[in-house]
Image (cartoon, rainbow, N blue to C red; front, side, top):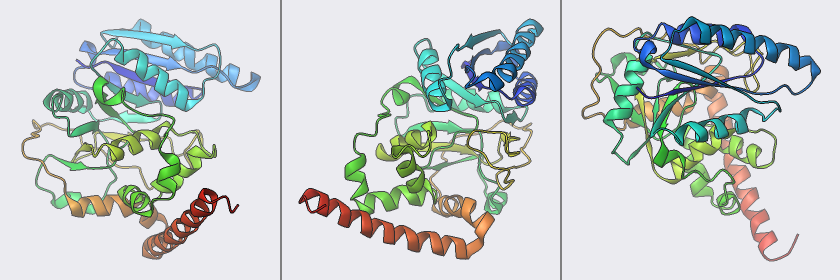
Amino acid sequence: MTPVVAFAYNRKDKIEKCLNSLSKCNGARETKVFVFSDGPKNDKDKYMVNEVREILKSFKEKGFFRDFIIYESETNKGLAQNIISGINSILAMSDSVIVIEDDLIFSNDFLEYMNKALSFYKNDTRIGEISGYHYPINELNEYKQDAFLLKKGECWGWGTWKDRWEKVDWNVECFDDYMINPGMRRKFDNLELGFDDMLVDQHNKRNNSWAIRWCFHLYLNNLFVVYPKYSKVSNCGFDGSGTHCSSQGKYVCDFHNGTDEMSFDNIIYDKKLAKKSSYYPIKSIKGTKGIIFHLLVRELKFVWHVWLGICKKYHRV
């Protein structure tokens, strides 16, 4: 069984629900779970972090999993560094990993799906990630196969392999070239509207997202992501308590508790599903007009950044 690595900070109710849900998955008792508890940012957080760690210790004693190992950081690494370093440490011991965060809950076949997919695609170098979650788009109701391929990454209940993860450039050394390449930026943003803004904001330290850099790595290397027709994960963190989550409910879905054996044979990249998935976050809040506005503003930004790049190259600014 592939090891599960979980990340927790200061939300005891979330990590308790998450681990309770994971413990009810088929295969939980054969699974090793490694939990990385980040250190407090300040005295106020210290109390809540200690509460989380008491919850974690109680799970260790319950014996729900094959093994339950807790890593407690004395300092606050921040979400991105905690996740990157945590995954690195587990992949030093394993060829693959399943990654979860504290605000997720799971279908009963989540672990079965993840382990089967990670095994099935282990040697398929076209595949960069296995995702357990997908947006609740209506078009999936008519989709005939058990899974499908997209070219965008996802970070809610997912897995990957050591040889894919270890190649990520977390510094995004090609960023300057990316900024003055509208075609490149357009293709990346078309994977999900807003990706380009997130990457630019990460570079400018307006967010500290590890996930957008992971998605960019998948894009640069033309890697596919496997998604289930029925989501195996739901996010219960849209209550304003998360580091990067608002209280929006557009991503919440009723996941499917599977009873049938899933097949990964002959699944394909579906352009229709890719487009619906790309537009879903903006359309669900702002409608079709929001998509048009995003695309228009995007093109204006691209022109402006190309102009700035040309001026900089010739020392005109």
